[in-house]
Amino acid sequence: MKLLGIDTSGKVASVAVTDGGIILAEKSVYTTLTHSQIILPMVKELLADCGLSFAELDGIVCAKGPGSYTGLRIGIAAVKGIVMGCSTLKCAGVSTLEALVWNSAAHRGRIVPVMAARKGIVYCGAYESDGERVTNIAPDRVCSAEDFAALVGDNALLTGDCCAEMKEQFFADAADVKCALPADRLQKASALCMAFEASPETAVEADALAAAYLQETKAEKDKAHR
Image (tube, rainbow, N blue to C red; front, side, top):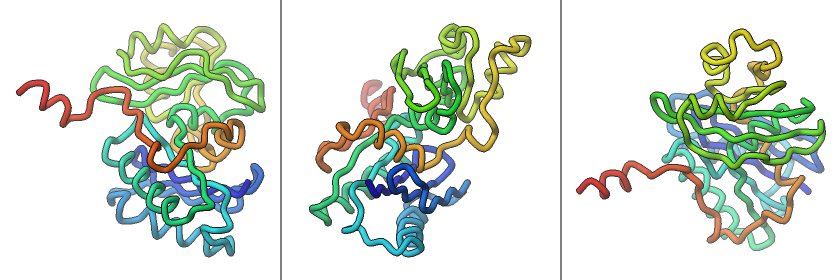
């Protein structure tokens, strides 16, 4: 499958084009600009570099969360707009945490992704990799840092934007709990494509593509307190 991956779930804006698991092109930018300003120009640039049009793709994959509320909505809206304008395309949303695990899928054993949510609170899950495929063994969740630590266990690889902080706080003396390489700790669009290649049955219609925030949005919280 020729796939376009778009990740706008965090500080990194990332776009990739893959073909049967081979990365044809990928660009990731750690940016202070809003994703709405740069993500579509990045998509157009990479497709042009690969000599491909939207019609020649088989699908588009985006990060569905958790992550930045605004960032996720930008990525999902972009994918919906592209797919609705090209009837041959299918689309899928992949867990941001699962995609982080795919960055280090060559690791055999438990991989635990962790992302900062707010002070003392993290997004996390637990996955197992056989070196080629990734399996979820504990559902993605939002929880305290202490609950995250209890999820890790022995012989684990930590990844995500605050994995080094969690390693230092809870596992400083645990030689069997390691962090992923720095280059693999942040979102990469190619990992979304790898996840979809492994589970193509997760494709959905464009109008069914939705974010999985794992916690209430600010608007929902404000409404609940009125």
